[in-house]
Amino acid sequence: MNLLEHFVGGKLISGSSDRKSKVFNPATGEQESEVRLASKTDLDKAVEVAQKAFETWSLKPSLQRARVMFKFKELIEKNADELTKLIVSEHGKVYEDAKGSLTRGLEVVEFACGIPHLLKGEFSENVGTNVDSWSMRQPLGVVAGITPFNFPAMVPMWMFPIAIACGNTFILKPSEKDPSCPLRLAELLTEAGLPDGVFNVVNGDKEAVDAILTNKDVKAVSFVGSTPIAKYIYENSAKNEKRVQALGGAKNHLVVMPDCDLDGAVNGLMGAAYGSAGERCMAQSVAVAVGDIGDELVARLSKKAEALKVGPGMDKTSEMGPLVTKEHLEKVKSYVDLGVEEGAKLVVDGRNIKLQGYENGFFIGGCLFDHVKKDMRIYKEEIFGPVLSVIRVKTFEEATKLINDHEYGNGVSIYTRDGDAGRTFASKIQVGMVGINVPIPVPMAFHSFGGWKRSLFGDSAMHGAEGIKFYTKLKTVTSRWPSGIRSNAEFVMPTMK
Ligand code: NAD
Image 1 (spheres, rainbow, N blue to C red):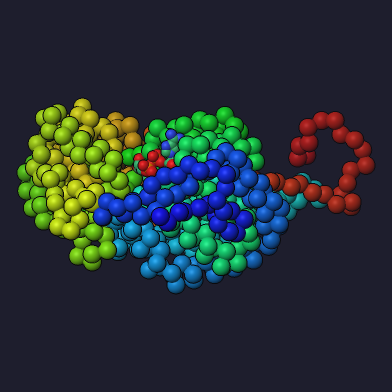
Image 2 (tube, rainbow, N blue to C red; image 1 turned 30 degrees about the vertical axis):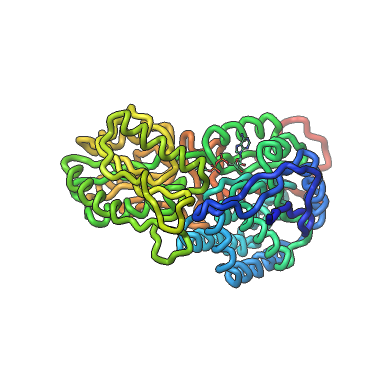
């Protein structure tokens, strides 16, 4: 059995723990590897290594750190096929989608290549007579990232390229469900010239996470995952005096206005609801049909959902792959059962799909519910599977109120030809990332990614300017040279005279 280890100090190591977790190929349902789960001692040792590496890495000129990023970018491009296959084999999503997610991560590396410019501070001459002032941003020290299963390359790459380009050293605790791609990225960073100990991967579960939260040398924690764990990470990081950003779960709405290009909305919804089998925090899992558009919308959606090509991720004709684990498949199916019990109309039922040659894979077909009501659990809770709910409302105002009342606020979209409706929607909606005739409004690397409400705990979104700010601390220097030094002591607050 292939055993996946930790990557610390520039090499693979076993650590002290014998606890392991199973890693499956979701398309076949077969166990492919096992991954070692770190103990607290293993995590603390990795932090020691990273702390030592920080002493020299943080002093390197930013241009030299940028050059490592340039080389890393080249290596990701060169090895894109291998990295993509690692994602497909452990996550299950289809090849082109996996490759797209790698590219979105690569774009953050490209952003981090500009770090000398991004770290430029501000300077003011003569803030007082003969007094100058400047500000600079300095790295924090050892920082950690704890990431979910659904984007094993992209989500870690929202974090570490910027963190290390800023001069920090990094401990990544990836999801134990698909750790191979992050381990390969660590090897590529070493090949790119990153000094040993600057980027480390510690595999594990709650024990490793708790060790991160209590280690006093970890200065900041970036987390992406489900809302209950995000809240736990946020509270415990803050309690232990760490900087923290914790991105949580979602329930995203796509509003279909009666005047919209309906084909565009239906196609947008198909990709956004069923792409990656709905295992995306930006998946559109609720279609809000406004006015009298509901019947036509459901008719068109159901035709397409029934025709969805479900299959293994490596089959070029598959549009949707399996779910990540058997447990997750059972959970998603139980939500579909629940929706029926709650009285929603199951228009397309994907629960009983069987794929020849992949009978043990974790597959479910696309599911579509109509007449979903706002008090149903299938509407209120995140399902994280290929289950689209249609909820019908009379007016635009009712649609915006529905969305603003929801506990999550990650992503949202509106399809309309009415510029006024689009503008009002963007301004009034209580959600962090908004699309207008764009189904999945994920910001580019040079903007920042983050939701509102219970989709993000903390004040900073990821990557872009917010990423630079999160991974650095501000220092402001005020200086005066001998020709301007005062000859008398002053005991009152200095003010401009
Ligand atoms: P998860 O919360 O189960 O796991 C995320 C990480 O937390 C993993 O590394 C896991 O090992 C660790 N973890 C799990 N249980 C823990 C515990 N009890 N104590 C400490 N650590 C624990 O999430 P997941 O199932 O891997 O990923 C899916 C979730 O992630 C969905 O809710 C999805 O919406 C969310 N997500 C959010 C975003 C975003 O940007 N907001 C992006 C991607 C995924």
